[in-house]
Image (cartoon, rainbow, N blue to C red):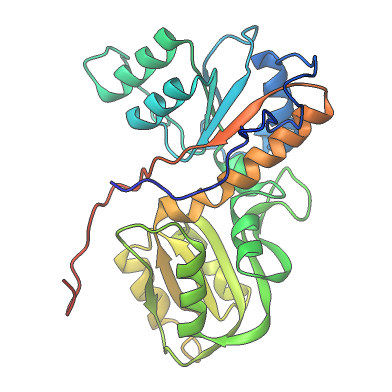
Amino acid sequence: MEPVNTDVSAGQSDGTNAAGHGSGETAAAPTLGMVLLAVEELWPESLAEDWDEVGLVAGHPAAQVARILFAVDPTLEVIEEAIEYGAELLITHHPLLLKGVTSVAATTAKGRAVHRLIESGTGLLTVHTNGDSAVGGVSDVLADALGLQNVAPLSPAANGLPEEGIGRVGDLAEALTLGDFAARVFGILPAVAGGVRVSGDRNGLVSRVAVCGGAGDSLLGEVRASNADVYLTADLRHHPASEAREAAVDDRPYLIDVSHFASEWLWLPAAAEALGNVLSDQGHDVEIRVSTTNSDPWDFILTPGGD
């Protein structure tokens, strides 16, 4: 699978790292426990959904962390990338152990992942729905990339600020046709096999846009209540999408379905920069990089009239 193309890397060839310290300075690398405090400042665990499993999965809080790798998925390939980079900490959006397990024996994929992390001394930290909900989170970054204004949560957080919650809705500076807006979406996302699927009139005008990075068909009711002209999310299943189109008023909201991985990958550079800034402000010296591994599960697609 082709790697994600990105020039976002906290470690620069001139010796300056993500925390902004030159190699000649004496700032020390923080402990993992210190990094956890910085992460909690940015993406509080209290913002995570009740069903979610976020926080530290592997790693000793007293261990020093000089290098951090951000990724969407804790796949074996991503873990190997982190080890090769020399990262003491891998921060992923998706959990490795979302559902309960009774064994982490190396005879299973998850077991191999846990063994590889521990044996290599690489910590693993999950920032999932708390990273979705927080200010500057997954959907905020997606809304910013699309140029949305007057942005508000689709589903406000129960334990957060008014601007925190799942999904976002906002307005374009100027109305676009659905076709042109879909092209904008295609242009900002990493290239993956699934591309961008659109339901609606290509020439219909859109100005109010709802977005949700990751799987978002559970928010279709909130989308209708927001009066959005179009809803951009991932993993739209057949029945919820079909029912939403049947219930559309004046053919709206239109639907745009994208790759789950691609919709959340956009957050990684912003998250890496945000964490680097917090650690730098605290006087820590850390190098942070964004994974280039494409963990989208699909390799190619066949379409009518396509090759």
